[in-house]
Amino acid sequence: MSLSSDNAPSPRRPFLEVRCGGFRLVVQRVPYKLITAVSTVAGTVTGSLWLQR
Image 1 (cartoon, rainbow, N blue to C red):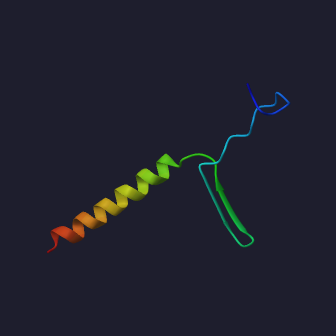
Image 2: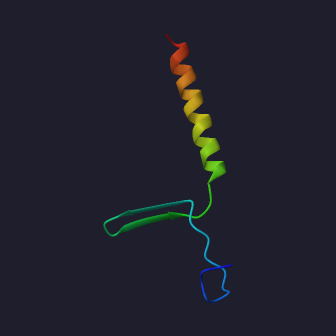
């Protein structure tokens, strides 16, 4: 049983919420494409720097 008296669905919680003074950043969904692109570039750069030694 729900503790709320009305049957309205509760809003979904955001994936990430950052508040700093007047600045507020809210990420609703995980940005999988962005994470994939950043990790690919970081891995390529790290690998090329590592192999130069």
